[in-house]
Length: 220
Image (tube, rainbow, N blue to C red):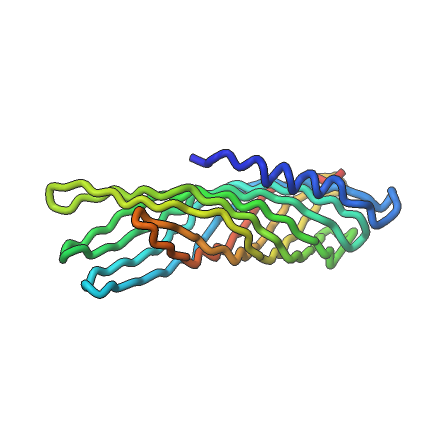
């Protein structure tokens, strides 16, 4: 389903762990967060070529999984590394030589995020934080199969990895006096889906997902 994308994760993890501390040792703390994420892409593509063939692309949201670890090196600031996995559905609506065709295919993608968390209500029962994000995205290739009359055709697209930006609003809601918390996040990722078809034609689709996350957090 997902290709092996451990290299960018390992690189960002190493960068996180080697960051110099910006405060005294007693100020250092860590937060581990994990849970489900609803990924809702904003894909709306339409094209009409000179022959009159129509191509429309849309997408449905999907449930994914996310995890993140933050090193909070001062009362207000922390550096977070996160990984998001999901497989939204892309719908391809074609009209080729007068034949209407509608097909769909799941596209697995991984987003590795790094951000600077600014804690707005530190040491409170509800710890609100915001962050700008740098995002490394990697998509699976696409292979649409459809029938035109008695013939089965395939439309294959190769996807490219890329860097992007985003933003995050999150909250850790503590359970009692312990270390566990309910974690809620809203993220917007300004991601483009770059694909190349079998004829070498390059197209960039606006993917731009809104990501709603609910999970658990643990502080140590």
